[in-house]
Length: 228
Image (cartoon, rainbow, N blue to C red; front, side, top):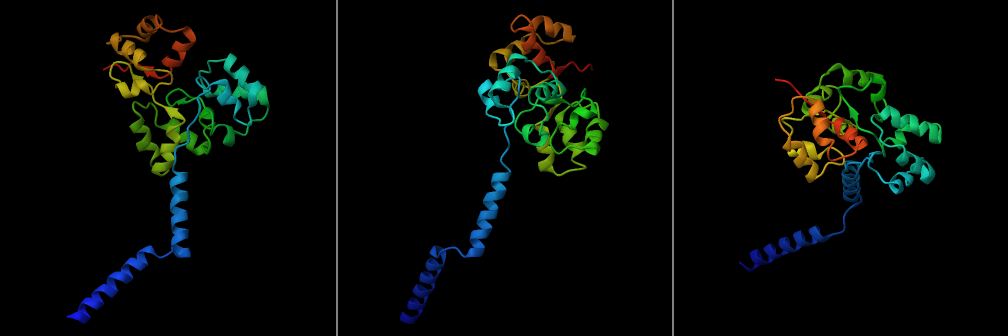
């Protein structure tokens, strides 16, 4: 009996020591890799040049403070092409892979030219063609499903940072409306207040009571009316 108790205590002590022992080099390496993967999976926050402050834009090394002042003064940019052209005018050649992973005008999947899709870092001729191939998109879920045939889920999620599908004004959820840059609770209320919309002209007339023409133009990019 005594020997059995001593043996049990010995086993328990060995287990405790093994748990508290310093990690081996292999264990450290595995932990390091796991942390790296977690860090890489963190979403990159893209600045929208129509919403970012001059200070935020100026902090991008390739842009700088003086160019940022002009970018802000010349807003709005209603598509990525117009923003790209402004950058080229201000700073010359643009390192698209570097700059457009930091600041970007979201692209309308249903109206953008194929060339515009290639501003998305990592998108070449083939993928730009696939983006266009499945038009018209009615929901972002459709984009996920179709483009998911060519790349993995993580890459599709990355693409979604750069593109959007306009919402139906009459059926859009609160979450969808609030995803429009610059829309908060007040404008959410106004967007819903005038439902049902029968035309975009009605939307322009009603929402134009509350915001400037430039501000309205930024909202209008994200909405449409889908007829039954």
